[in-house]
Image (cartoon, rainbow, N blue to C red; front, side, top):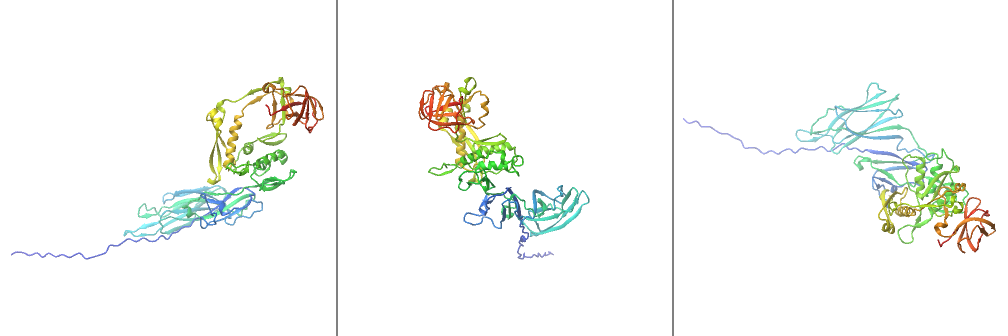
Length: 569
């Protein structure tokens, strides 16, 4: 008999697949950056505006008044003796970046030796915090951690035991302030991650210490220091601290009481008295460096130790209007100084660098600091074969290889955040004669392209005037000081009788020791009893007798040196 087998089956029923869900991020950090910047020694002139303060090179405020950043607050202190403290920062804070990961097996520790500290603030960050369930859902996660404190090497004490719970995929930050007890020498802080590391791609539990901040609680006014306090949301800068810069006018300094620094004009006769005002005239900034006792030489020198009268002439030369190099009839002051001193240096080096701004030189003479500039001035003393030992002048000059024909001048460009810019200068006639030989120079305190160009051209042209004359003299060699202008009359070079000594003086008639090669209209220069040289226009020449148009300010003495200055030479 055949056996029948019954086959049974069931058709598959319909069912829908489950889509994993993601819990919304519920950890949102807002990290506020509070920064106090010491701008410099006060008192600063004027005030700052949002247009003068920059974060990463971008001004807080546009020229039309619109804001480039939201939630930024700031305060400015000019650096007066009686200024108020800034309430946004009740103490001093020094934030130090760390950026290290803290795991359950490796804690972070740090020892602090500054016993003036009041607290330490730790800034923690979780780049992501989540857990992926087996069904694919993305949910929050929890991490326990603790902060321990050890004082003077004693036992560890847990000062904080807490946790972070929630979900974030874009990063979350929080800060903890750890108040420090009295200590004899040190504190040590330890940050521990208690929850074991998951070591799984399904769990985001990385924990990092971004930075720690040393805090000293005090209502500090910082007298005589200009301050800028600024507070902003660091999320606008991806959690980092931007570069902070500003454009204040700078220090209020001593200027002559007959000087208007805004119009750069001098009124009447200066009595030697000063007033306080802002200026960018390099001569008066030089004076301020010498007499200021907080950062200059004022604790070693007094105002009597600087020749302010010569500096007054230099300052007037700096303020003279010259073409601005833009074409047309525009003019600008010859020299200005806009510089930020940030490093200590030898005093003489600093003064020399600042004197270079007005093409000057400095030296110590007669118990004074003297600053002179390369500028037009009358002859200070005269030399001829008559007052030179053996009547001998020796001439020399440099080789063609040392003749500069071009210059490359470094200056600070205000249109590019005061970054260094290079200004090339060429003298085509010299290039054609000597070839290409470049002079590289730095224009300290220069923020104008036109001024940088003038400095480079001065460097080229003065280098080209390289004839040097050497001669030996007697005691009168002590009369001309460094930087003085001397006149040299060498008849062996000129081929004419241009110098000698006086035989007799009768009013405006000067009898010489020889017949000069001079005509009416030339100038007779005499060394006067005071040691100064003075020039007068020649009215007539009659043999050895020369008549000048006006008498000299002092009566010339017999045997005094004379020389003739002529446009025909």
